[in-house]
Length: 121
Image 1 (cartoon, rainbow, N blue to C red):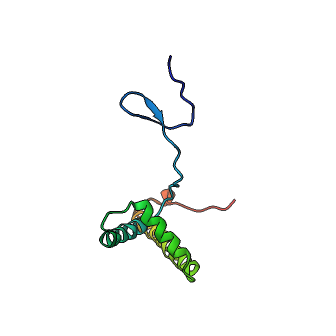
Image 2 (image 1 turned 90 degrees about the horizontal axis):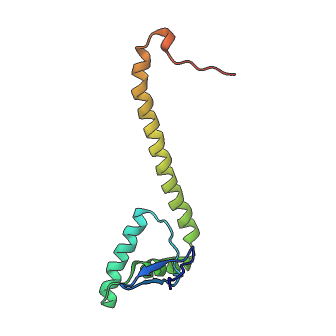
Image 3 (image 1 turned 120 degrees about the vertical axis):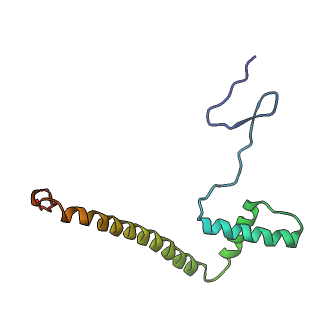
């Protein structure tokens, strides 16, 4: 008799058959590369203290729970967010201005009827 598999369930091959995996209580949260580097550095420090290498999820969870107890964490989130989002805006702005500078010489040498013009409707 063939085993019935349910849609939406996760299965893993154990060498003989596919067995259903228990759902994990862990969530996946995207973080910056800078945050991952901090987690890895903390993991190394924890490895020295506890004598074994802890899982990244354990280290990240401990860091978040500790940070949640800090009185100034909201201000830290605000300043980090400003730094991250400002760097993205600045990079986009710099890229746009470089593109405009590259396009400007081509427009200057174009014939008058080929020059770009703006119109308002």
